[in-house]
Length: 209
Image (cartoon, rainbow, N blue to C red; front, side, top):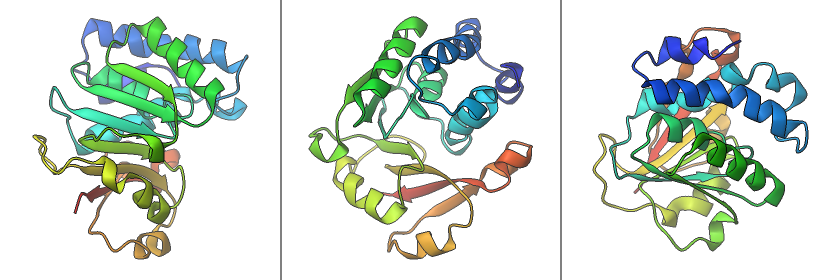
């Protein structure tokens, strides 16, 4: 699938944003051949399975300018890189414990001219900064994840949703969600995007207590 999939679901992109999204295919094909950050199968479906999937968060919330977002376990830069393209006035801190993955993120962000992305090899437990939102894509079960990030979220924010966690996850989550005492809201990505891939994909929003 081509970048037209992104243009279809986000028709109000600027010309610069359209160019940045279009450049992702070549950049990830190039870097993935050297450092495997996307599965061979998925690289051919990059725009559906990685870019559009990441942008599912933007169907739940439109981050206000000046917001600060932490992407935990970003891997090759998802969901952080697509969100940073979509929200150029929002600051994104992308962290992963694996250095070679962060190298890819840094190279992609540099090639795209993304001034709002900081990519760092780090464990979230060691970060001292706080953020408006923590985003992530199926790094682990929600219960341990919430334990890692609970104290990284500011109490006061200026977005339409209270500050919290926005977690991309798929499959049957009933058992996993029963493990967390927090209130949460679940958004089905199949309500926004068509196709078999999105049938069980969700954004789980957990507001800060």
